Length: 300
Image 1 (tube, rainbow, N blue to C red):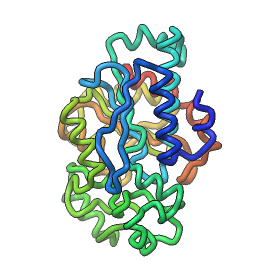
Image 2 (cartoon, rainbow, N blue to C red):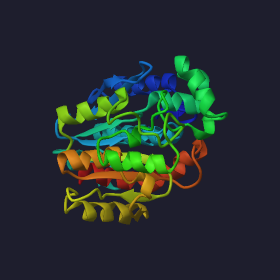
Image 3 (tube, rainbow, N blue to C red):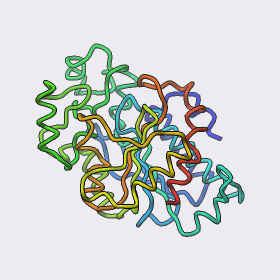
Image 4 (tube, rainbow, N blue to C red):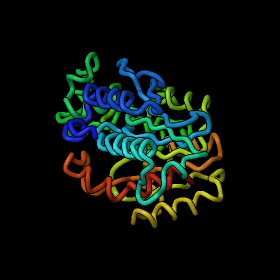
């Protein structure tokens, strides 16, 4: 296992070393960039099987939620080990189950935000003055990318409603959280994931966030009828609740855009409980509770 990786925060250097180690250990794993962040950090994808029509997991959309990327990398490692050894993940025979399935994991859609949340404003480079002007403690407040845009408000799904809610909340410009930008897909990170989805047509999308132990599956009239059943299966596995997000999080998200654009199942899964950022000490507990859910999600 990547023991050193799981004992340290997932900064870009640590994460890149972990992905390189996985790629060297497991020849069936493909690792490739899907784009770059505002500050030029690569947004990496891990692929098992055919990338076209794969199930897509996305973590690290918000800076403080860096533990989600670690969970996904650990799941990927467990899956690869089972595929190589003929083993099981949560009592599921992985070789047999994955014969007609493929998986793509993007551990950190927002690497700049992750670095800012872990290291402070210095990680924002030329945007450090902006970060300093918006918060005195980015390691406890920073969810946005380096420009102060919350990526999960930046997608083209209910955009006008999103902006109206932001205005009512007094959010009119860059902020540590909940500012959706000047227009949909204004940020390179949003462009990277939407372009990737358009090119590779995922069969389903799971955006992994923290915290709350909740599953969201619904977005308007284009929500597939099977999505509710899928969410209930995932909830039964994990003990999480199937619900709907609060008003400020009800539009503009990645799963909202995915459902609206492709009319395929899209989900937001809020892992863990507590206050972000959830610490390294929570990793094992959350992983044990979510492993079966992730495995089932990859197969549904």
